[in-house]
Image 1 (cartoon, rainbow, N blue to C red):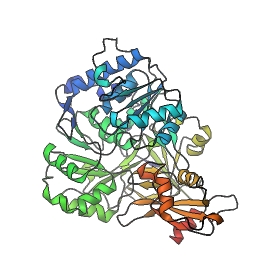
Image 2 (cartoon, rainbow, N blue to C red):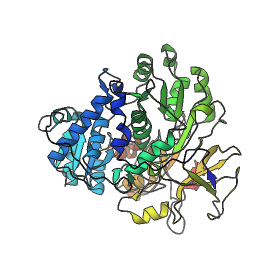
Image 3 (cartoon, helix red, strand yellow):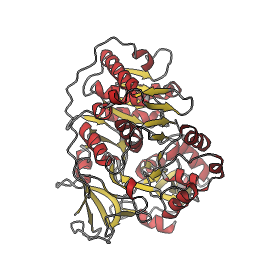
Image 4 (cartoon, helix red, strand yellow):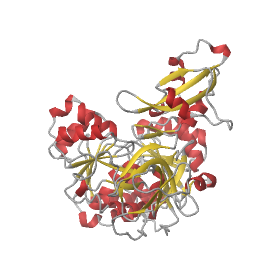
Length: 522
């Protein structure tokens, strides 16, 4: 068993809104959130006061402890207020991809039993349609303004009493993001207040921050990486978060320059742009002190090219997954110059790890040998909502979470992730479940069978590649028709990017698709 070099941290027995905003009065007029597009600023005092007023208005509207509220929004400075207001009112927040289709959104609403939605006016039509499809939604609120819907701005004027909800941090679920785990369709990951808050305390010794640090939030808050690294962690420590709704390279670079950003937490495609795009040379990025990449594997040569170009310490990596709240490993800020190329970091405080044989899962492997990564610590999820069998398959009776990733540890404790057992596709950090796309493909009348795997494109992004068996009556079915069929029914990041027509999909006797054969043929 491998243990963290850091001292253990005690479990944080606080609701997440208190764990993050406990020092808001101390930070006072320090900017907490800045809109990177128009400069609108919220101080720590305002975030604290605003989320309490919105919590009061939500409680007055009927939000009760145990309710689920769906937060359906791109990054805005209102997102944290909505999140903390909901948890203070006793609700669990299920975060929804802003590009989800109405059908996808409705599935999440039904599965999570969400009764409330907070969205933004540009997404209101999708939210309304999803609510109609799902049923059970009592009200849709908007962060900005829209006719016929109460807005968070109006709710700031509520004179209702602030709700005093008895929250059990160890048991009550604060966030319910959806993840595909090691395989399969998306499932609700139950993360308690204690698990999320403790993970913030675990990460702090390795990646400290404070007043004066300025973080650029371009990765989405709805994703557990953005929720932790770009929202909860910096706001807990008094840093300033500059918020962008989406990644646009020129706007991203301008925000770094104009807001004097000191730290970036990004995914590999952004590291690629920083390393190679000619526009980078037109901006002053000298305020940057460090970059950390996570959510998908980062090529060591690409990381080195980025750091050389920007004159920074080597780009560090971090490792985790939604089911781990999400962090388990990171390259510490004070060790970036010493970390070996390609490592995803060292164990954070209070976290244990095993590397077990792929052929004999009960056999532990020593440093240097590659096997499946198992994690144990206080950040492990409570379980999958309504799926006890999937939870049991993920977390063994001794409390070890089986990540499905393959890696090895060197003699100094640095982890290297080299492959994965699991079948998920990681497109620019977003999880794409092959099973979900295969089920959709099989609804096409011209498709007899289908399998989907990940394939790397010219930019190093893993993209969905479909292997399709045509029905005898559909000999003229084209790649373009299939790609359009899928694109009309899923969020953009799930789209099929390549189609190969085959006479049959390789399967085991059990019926399981032999994806390894497809990967080898590709």
